[in-house]
Image 1 (cartoon, rainbow, N blue to C red):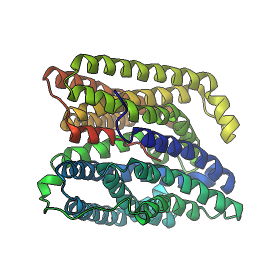
Image 2 (cartoon, rainbow, N blue to C red):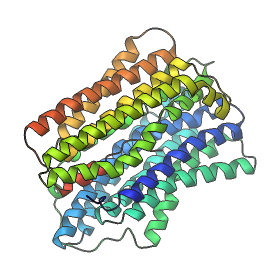
Image 3 (cartoon, one colour):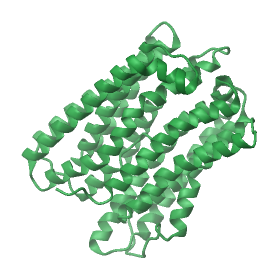
Length: 430
């Protein structure tokens, strides 16, 4: 079967975003002169990508699904866009009030006394809302090249801003935080200016048209994004006053451990829709065989990534970031990333089979497992957090595997709407 429309541009956008994330940490640390100086930016980075995709990815998914459904009927999507824009504005307002309420704690305990980072976090929330809504319009309208532009431009603009700040000798950490916050805007502006975020007038939309799965998607997305970014956030909260460099160093390990995950997400953007369309065509034997091969690929990538992290990880960290991390830390982080990758793959298949509630449950179990494991383990910070990530990701993967088995046994088939939601279900950004 030919690749579904748009999968190659989306895969390219994901790949570019991953490479730029990798480079940003290197350039930022060099520009600011030390791991301690770069620590507030690392804290902002992971807080942003724990909150923004968690809050706004479901809006992107539901807007894309609703516009796609209307496009099939020949109806314009502007009414559903207006509904989702209202929801997005409401979420931004709630998030902003919450951040303001926790501002003193965030500034003093999380950002080390830096109020500019609190402002940058609030700004990033406000910026990522229209970013995800724009991507929802693009995916629902079949404009996947524009979708890839928004996806890839985020990373490209961020690294270019960072290089520009470094080139002119800026050493105030707040400017690098603001670069994280405003980076998505250029891609959104480019897409809007070219008319690729345009929607046509159409019949009035009801709230039920844009919110049938929003609650489950929101819960699952918040928990999934929180879990994948929980390590550096927890390290920041658990580290002592004289251990600020640990946060940046742990961030290096997390970024390196994500390399297989970023690469596989790009490949998966092509693989998963093909499997879902096999199921939609009632080719269930081929679907099961293809899904099994996909799981084998995930396991293979996970094994290679974990072994590579054990053998080459310390050398890579020293070469690229001039830092030290133990083989154990890098291998456990890579193994946790492998389980997360496995869980994400199966979760997308479950969403394609209309299992939104099971996916929300799985990510919630995963996040709860991380919190409990990290809280009750004793010993050094790295050991507590890395084992917590491993346990949390593995727990989520188990729940998804059970859910997938149940959905397949029940004979549920995907449709175009659930296929689109599954294709765009990516809580890992940055």
